[in-house]
Length: 318
Ligand code: TXA
Ligand code: MG
Image (cartoon, rainbow, N blue to C red; front, side, top):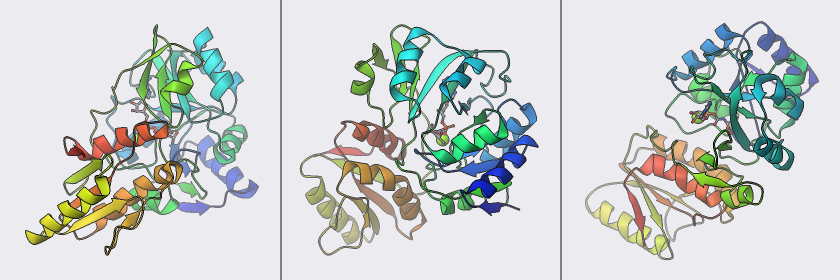
């Protein structure tokens, strides 16, 4: 059974007890919902791989409650110090040389561990209470878009995990990941901390290593980007309808005369709503999904990175 807990001191105390005895708890973070278990307990970590149906070869991020705690689990170099001072707590994950205390199962046998300090009081208090670092992968079944609401976690993991703490995810897109063990550092996944923000502190190059994974969406998904995107979407959908095909449209604001899934005019609102929109579109009785993309600037680069994982080759620049 999966218990729903409130994000108050009672709920967090209960969740901490579950973590201490090796259980699994999902909770909101500032990015997306995470699925936690005691990062130093091998059996507890294995449960996370199992319920997410995640390959054991894909390592997990470890969450910490403070910058000091990073030193317990990893070797911290000068580049890491600069970034931690600038961005912790926040939507940035650092890949560092791991210490022996971290079980190999967490890092899929790698000698590096990914670490982040969430900017959300629920996981911070939970880790303080449980007195241990907690793994923080997204709380979805592998291949699905990350969950940004409690109902998404229930959809994917309901009945399979011990508890879910309710609460809001402010950003809606997963953290930026940077490997700081190499020179220059490597940006492995774009997120809310943009590459230009990182470059104010360190030398970093973009290695798109994360985009091989595709979302398992059950219909072909097309993304239109550029000045004429909205006009082209209307034409494209009208053409599809002439062929008897029905489309779900994800757009920033209403498209004349059509029902659409709105993701918001501001880029921040878009980031917060896009994963939910993908889940809704995927569950609709339609033949294809058409999405209005965004400019690849700031968090827009992270949004387009995720949309490429959903669209594959079907990105249309207009
Ligand atoms: O915002 C986030 O980062 C969310 C919240 C819940 O914390 N978590 C998240 O975790 O997105 P997950 O497991 O869905 O994605 C983690 C990514 C994976 O692509 C994984 O391969 C990469 O981080 N990763 C983890 N450990 C790594 C390591 N040691 N070296 C390189 N990549 C690593
Ligand atoms: Mg994930």
